[in-house]
Amino acid sequence: MEGERAETVLVSACLLGRACRYDGASRFDPALDRALAAEGVELLGFCPEEAGGLPTPRPPASLSDGDAAGVLDGSAQVVTDGGADVTAAFLAGGEAALAACRAHGVGRAFLKEGSPSCGVARTHVDGLSVDGPGVTAQLLARAGIGVTGVDGPGGERGPG
Ligand code: SF4
Image 1 (cartoon, rainbow, N blue to C red):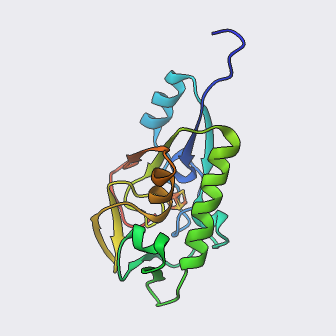
Image 2 (image 1 turned 30 degrees about the horizontal axis):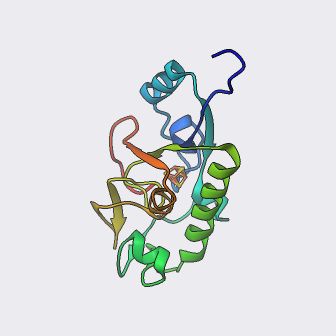
């Protein structure tokens, strides 16, 4: 309707072409880009791991001693392949994503599958791909934001 502001949706920045993945690559998804363009929504690209203060490139990380709910509740951690505890950065990134959603009235998020941050149906625990969400996806879902997992071009290729 004329005068109505377009809906803003949050999208994992790597799916929009930003080279923010742990390996310094992006995962631009033309099909997602076309679908969201057809909806006429505003895109808010966001990378929780960078927002949490982690550099790019960075060591791959995965959940440890539990799942994303455990990370949010303090009973599980996020650890790099080299053994560094990056839980605080992942939590900070998730909180920043939620704050961005609230600031922009976001009710839907499209997030990169498989990531320990952004994965919705799949994430990484102890270096293995498993069912379940990442930290940011879990946090957004708890806040009532609709999260949709997106594999990206070529499907799942390791932690995001
Ligand atoms: S999957 Fe999420 S955390 Fe990983 S690079 Fe993409 S936006 Fe950043």
